[in-house]
Picture 1 (spheres, rainbow, N blue to C red):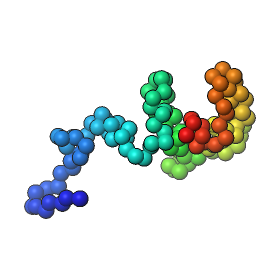
Picture 2: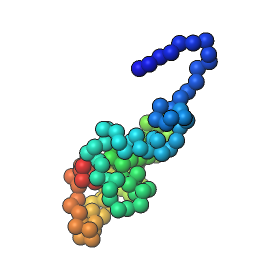
Picture 3: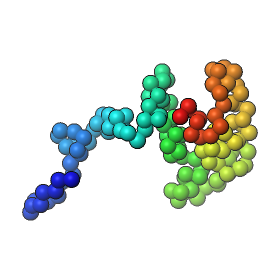
Picture 4: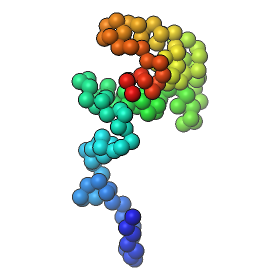
Length: 125
């Protein structure tokens, strides 16, 4: 890391662009090219709308706003699943909830996708 000391006031500079100004494109390119998601690269190649790809990535990273994750952010609402009254987690919503257990066989029949056994295998990772 290069540090230059001077009497000038500090300035923020975005290192991913030549101008030093943040852009969404530079962040997107960095995320796609980073080594932090190689096992999930195939999601970006799937022919679905970008918002679906981003949602799939959020599920994989386990950061979607379930009631459990909202509680970690000081949310004070109910933490129970709206469908079955159990604690709402990502695993519960996509795998353990009775509604999810009904939906996966339908997805399997319609798209020939094997129901996942864990959140990590939810999208084939």
